[in-house]
Image (cartoon, rainbow, N blue to C red; front, side):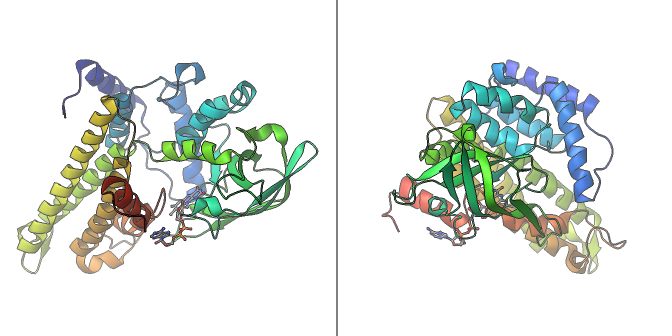
Amino acid sequence: MDLRFSPEDEQYRQQLRTWLEENRPQDVPPKDQDAEFAYRRVWQRKLYDGGWVGINWPKEYGGQGATLIQQAIYGQEMTRARAPQPANGLGISIVGPTLIHHGTEEQKKRFIPKILNADEIWCQGFSEPNSGSDLASLQTKAVLDGDDFVVNGQKIWTSLGQYADWCILLVRTDTHAPKHRGISFLLVDMHSPGITVRPLKQITGNAEFNETFFDNVRVPKQNLIGAMNEGWRVAMTTLTYERGISSLATQVRIKQQLEGMIDYARATRRNGHVLSHDPVYRQQLAQAYIRVEIMLLNLYRGITSRLRGQPPGPEASLDKLYWSEMDKWMQEFGMELQGPYSQLLHDSKYAVAGDWQYNFLRSRAGTIYSGTSEIQKNIIGERVLGLPKG
Ligand SMILES: Cc1cc2nc3c(=O)[nH]c(=O)nc-3n(C[C@H](O)[C@H](O)[C@H](O)COP(=O)(O)OP(=O)(O)OC[C@H]3O[C@@H](n4cnc5c(N)ncnc54)[C@H](O)[C@@H]3O)c2cc1C
């Protein structure tokens, strides 16, 4: 494993760092969720104008054709600069790459440019109330009627559904075939008659995702991606991109939060002494520091094996399991550090620690999306340790 970056890669880092210094918004993002989404849309347009959206996409589709290392650097630098997330996150990370792989030329021409400049926002309609981990058991049905599919059913957890113009939708088109074989992959206009989107408020107070209902929604046949009943294969491409290499950016984020906790422990006195001198807190801070550094080394190990030509393997499950469980532990520790102040939300005038309470509540989501911790453990057990299937 080589822990150094090449001079070319360091130059790439510097170029992006300079661009971010000149262009990153300096104001505080709005607290209101709708206003914050609009703010991120403006930011994405700025990134687009600078050529900094979809960097891993091929150049002919508006990307930079960035290498794996450049993608890693991009994630690290964006987080280091505390830049906002672009509005069309799912469009950039999973929809565009899936269309580039499986779309027809006409579909690519129609949909791809508007993803990068945030003109059209995308959501992902995969999960259903009874089909999450066991996604292939999905029940939302589509039946061909002339030149259209007619879609009926319900999706859930649809992130950004309330803002989306388009959705990648998995539907059952053959109810008799084995469950992985009767699924098709559609692009659905979210403004079509028959679609109802109901935001779900989370424990954090935000409504990040939605219930989405489809009642006789007509979807033109030309919006089918890949072959009819072969949507599972297309969905696997989407999920591969969903479990991409964003964990390096996550590592920087968690490290920034830990630095905040260390500063807080140094500056705060409780029970007659500075918190950072308390042996229990000291040990926990040291433990947190070690865990965050181990995360980085594991990620570098994964990237090194990819650079040596090995395909992405089950190490993505190790990374996901490791960071999401560590994040939960760290955010809980952040609450402990605050003592009784942990009961106050950031908008209280007595609150002492910014968005730590939000981070604590939000950290639970990380162990659920993109495959729950139990599912990751199953993958590690079966494919890394060679244990029998449960
Ligand atoms: C913040 C967030 C955003 C999301 N955004 C989207 C989105 O935009 N689009 C979308 O389609 N989906 C989205 N999801 C849904 C996500 O993919 C599912 O929540 C996830 O796949 C788990 O499915 P489930 O919630 O139905 O839980 P279930 O699959 O019902 O699992 C319930 C419990 O059983 C356990 N379990 C299930 N199967 C096994 C097994 N075989 N072995 C051991 N334990 C098992 C699970 O680990 C879990 O603890 C999002 C989720 C979150 C939290």
